[in-house]
Image (cartoon, rainbow, N blue to C red; front, side, top):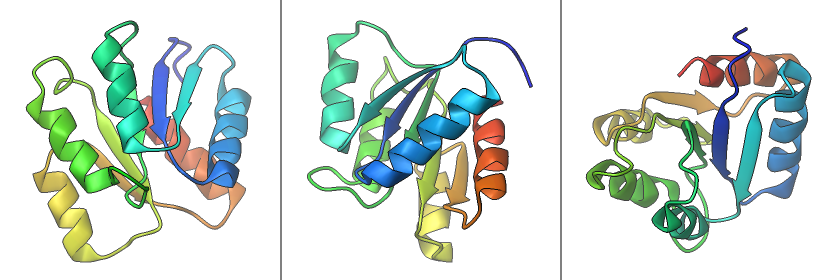
Length: 129
């Protein structure tokens, strides 16, 4: 795994999923920075400040206010953010939702796993984006 420091923005409304993501990310490498948002709206507000753009954005699909699909479309239309790789991490495994996410500009789509080891593999793949 690369030792390059990556700044990851995670938009995830489930605190348990955030905690698990954060913990596994820290185990993989403590040099990465994770910024957490409970909604897509909060993520977009942060990006609008322009203070510190992330290297990678990870989106849940089912969030309150602005959901993942809407947030993804907004991200990919904005010239300042469209270059940032976006990974989807969702419980949704509908082939239609997955196809639409890729059509809307997602770099990868991961279905939330059931084991810690599977979650670790997904996070390692996300870090390669």
